[in-house]
Length: 139
Image (cartoon, rainbow, N blue to C red; front, side):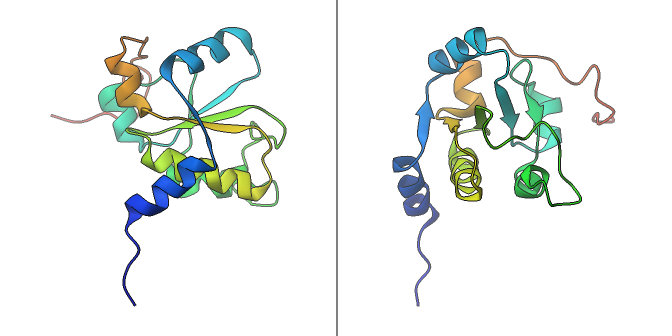
């Protein structure tokens, strides 16, 4: 049995997911006060590179546990009917995460297709989270 390339899995997930551009996400952020923007990157990625302002961190490995109301790790900001946009560094982890949330029953999920790298390259605002994070790099 051969291993299916992750690139094929990602491409298939993209076809079944709403993929937002930087501009589309910015527009949603302006119009929707209840929008949940989830940063799937590891905490050190946020500390080192910054984050989309207002985004909350849910590391990819914990997402489904934090989103499941029956899980002991549940976070109350996850609601099945709340508009939720996920992002990662380049759009691969987030498309798989969006597919997982949809499979769980979340009704209004999208992913930032170019990821945080695309957000930063577009000159969109980046929040310096290192100033308030207890997770900082030591010299």
